[in-house]
Length: 302
View 1 (cartoon, one colour):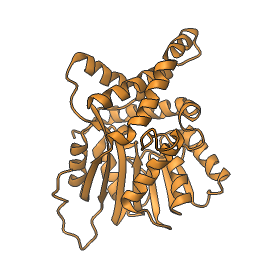
View 2: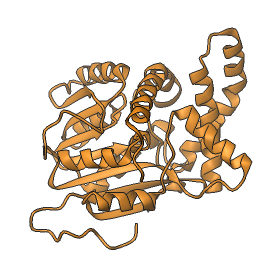
View 3: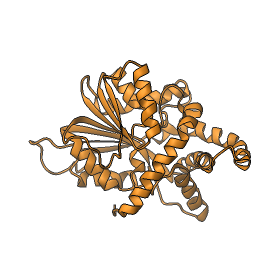
């Protein structure tokens, strides 16, 4: 992964912060409700309600690395605190969440206070590629649909390795590039998706896993979960498709921003990209080596 310029990284970070500040209420009303989940839900349509699938994603990731009571977890890109509060409630973990969105920090802190969890969780307004957190301070790093926003993936992985203690675990779930777009129409679809969500180019899951190994992580394993998120992605598709005419009318009247209109287009594109295999969804787990470990990474392909 070639490093981007400092100027492009700074511009990307500001754009992401502005995007989430502007869309925070939109996501609450139309997506996550009281779950605080700014991610796709895992499970088929028969597997409970939309909100139950959103919460199930937390369980899938927590089970993947066996988060234990009392462990310190860094929620890198914590959104409005949904996963952090879930981990504190259901796994009795102690969680620090970081996000570049000031609006998200305010909402997350209020949610923690309302839930009586202010002593178990902390939310910080920081860039997860260069935090002020101490070295080797966490048992677990958790990145749920957040690493995709790192313009500099190497800086992100280096920072996660710095704050994770030796032997600590890293779990992430995200969208990745499944294959390159094969036509101009597919290229436009991919660009619509990235533009609407303020995303840089996506790596493949294999490439990201290889980057993790280069940064010293071991036992790196990636698992595809496209089918698990299909129902959730389809729900987003239909919501955005059916409300898009209203969004366009609202934009013409000046009551809907260009950000929200582009976000609706991205929601439509996301499902098409997933169905065509241009996008894929994967959970990746890894570990920071302990002093007694061999220095090489896991040779198995991701």
